[in-house]
Length: 518
Image (cartoon, rainbow, N blue to C red; front, side, top):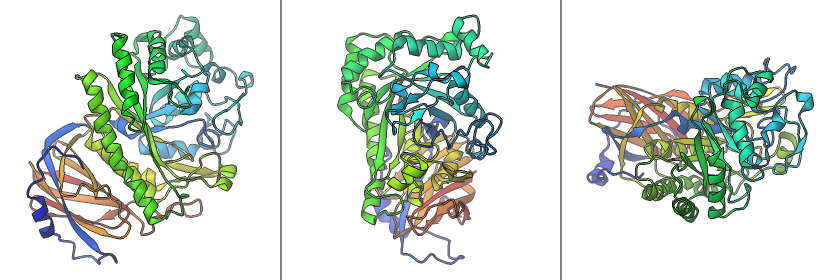
């Protein structure tokens, strides 16, 4: 893992690590000895809760059948949301939720999703299966769902097939208190109070499904659209520009050069890239080789964060423009029969998926000074989902628990780590501190070797510690509708030796240590 702290002294000391775990029965696998130092007095930056953000698109059964069942369903609450899904997401503490896409966003016209349901037009979803979108889930429904789970809304505006006026009017409709025609229309549709939406994406993947544009073409449109988005009602919009696909430095450079040439006084508030970790197998049939290849991608993600932020810094040295990864996660091969029954891009979620989620979150924590928001794709049923649903069933995936284990980092200050092993499949770790509380999250991506890990704490002394572990010996194991609790966090032994925290991690595991410092 990247570190600005010297790594001297570690190669020689790793083999001599201390462990006091002999009181319990050993796991049946070889265990390597590793050492990661926690510099509790070397701060990186505050871990914004938004780094644990989520994304819900009108794709497959993420919205319809997943989150939204409509009023009158016995499984729905009074607002039409799946009760179990709302409960689970509220318990998870989703900080921010991006909607309505994705590719869907640049063919979505917000006026289709307001007003009486019977009058809402039916449109063809050209991106995800050409099914008929009835627009029963629109702006008011999304805001109500965000309020139900405690999330900040993040709207992706339509640049690909929309107009500056359309986006401008959407912002006014949502945020202007009263007295304008659009604000009064919002009130007549059931919301007297403005929604006060802060986060606005100006397009999505405009290098691809959002218009197949060059960076220069998109920059021209961004400037036009952004000109008309104002702080209606006193809510300052946080405008997010479309950044690159993965670590495409050329796209980012050309966009920023075009911004410089236009001498625009106000740059975007945010710049978003997308980074998916593709896979060559269906979710329950991964080979060791393909799993290792997929999990190794998180080292490239961290490199992308470092390089994209460094490029932006050449134009924005004061970092007034934030870097986002508002789509990320594992993207496995789909099973056509499952997609037909459960929706496009339905993807089962395994302990491998949870390890991947933890590795991604650890990247964000380690680079907390360089990122302002990250949104895993997606919330329910689609791709790297937190929940899976099928008719009356709603289950939490292993990745849900990986996010749950990482939640104690939110709002704390990331601190520096120092490791002797920088390999892509080395132990993934991140640490944060607030006063005398230290949080350490760990992931072991190896399928055949455990790790006896010693973490000396510098700048403070740990006086107590507890740990929880998420693990399964089969990297293709999953929580299913018939066995929803197969993979869940458990209490796990952790010991202290003076300045060091010692813990053993089995293969394919995620752990969180909460330590109290003197």
